[in-house]
Amino acid sequence: MTDCPTAIERFLLHNDRMSADTAQQDVRRFEAPTSKTSNGQEDFPESSTAAENNQNTVRQKIQDLVRSAKGEFFEDGMETGFSRGLFSVVATHEKHAVTELGRLILGGAATSEIASEALRWLGRMPDSKTYRARRWLLERCLLCPSPQVRDGAVLGLASMNDLHSVPYLKQAAEREPLDELHHEMVQVVGFMGASSSAVLTTKNP
Amino acid sequence: MVASQTHPFDLADWFAEGLRLTAFVSPSVSIKDQSWWETLLESPPEVKTQRPKEGVQREEGPFEQGRLSLETQPARVDWRYSGSSEPLLESQQPLPGLGSFPSALVPFLSLMHKWVSIGPSLNRLAFGAVLFLPTQSRVESYQKLSLLLPFALDAEGSTDFSYQINRSRQSVSSIANLKINRLSKWLAQVMRFGLIMPQNPAPKIQMDDHHACRLELDINTHQDYEGEFNSDAASAVMDELVSLAQEIASNGDKP
Image (tube, rainbow over all chains, first blue to last red; front, side, top):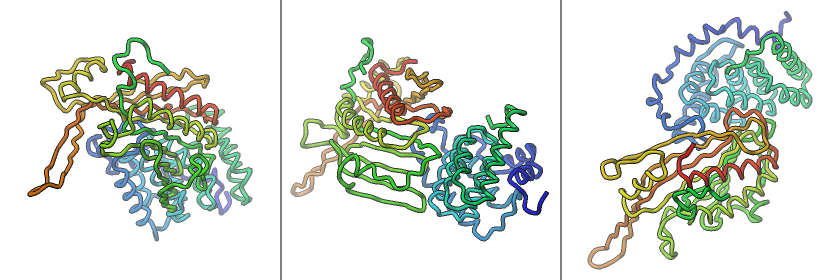
């Protein structure tokens, strides 16, 4: 292994530090609601496309979280107050939290470092309810102007290991101006193809 | 699209409070610098607000019998056509909103077809409508709801009724494996309007209650669909969503 880990090495590093079991423990440790009534979402079915009533509350929580992360030191794969807060707000507000986070990242309100950290953790969340919203955001962030954000998106997608993302990663690799990041994208595409032929059910259901 | 002959209500019995088209864009598309409003309406919006740090833009202006708004966010585009919250005192229509559902639908749908022809590639599409069916009283609202729902309500002895259901269906379009959510919410409502008339020695206040059955529709392509819609497919899907909304308003809640 070189001094600077490659995308796949870094992805495996994440898995070492956060196995499926520890991930589950982390989810229990967050202050997720014990019932739907507590977060006021029982009236908001999954099939609905209407805007959520408490959108401003979610927005405020995400903005506070991003604000509080400024100055925090992020080490690849190590959980922080920011990552715990992110898990908590996504567990509570589900896809609406991901949408609000996406607004801040894509609008440039979150620094590249915070955005990148958020994207890496979004890829690792063992939460099927927000899966598509998280995957959409990761795929969309491959278009972001910041290389650091694109790097976070690649790593998040590598954690998800979903073949759906392969065309988006390939397109991103074709237009990627940075050699290192281009190589990382190509590597993740190859890794996804290889793992899909060996294991068919790695993606979050 | 005409509903079946067994329908208990004509579509024109329903009034539209608001109509919505929501489109979820493909992750391969950035919609930051769009100019759809000017292109489609051939004039600038009356109001334009932006929150650039959140990637949100909202444009708004008068349109037909009400107001039209276009809100774009990184992941979605919402077109909303809504009426005034006040009754149109000068018109023959004493209720707020956009007039009858069929008449409100025509200009909105026409505009939306033009938009999907120039819009981005989409992941998911939704048609929303808030409709109301005027009645004379709360009891009549409950009686009419009983005709529209698969069970009878105790019109005299119950209040605070609310019923929501998603009866998803396979799409009849040529798009493979496309499921459509048919989410409907049924309620009885009363709209209260106050009119203050300046008089001596004190102003006279007149309150009018308008009862109605309320139907909130959210007809949308299923969240698990993995494909993308180009403009032709989006146009066909939109027609199907609207047709399903009309069917529910006409026939009531049926599988």
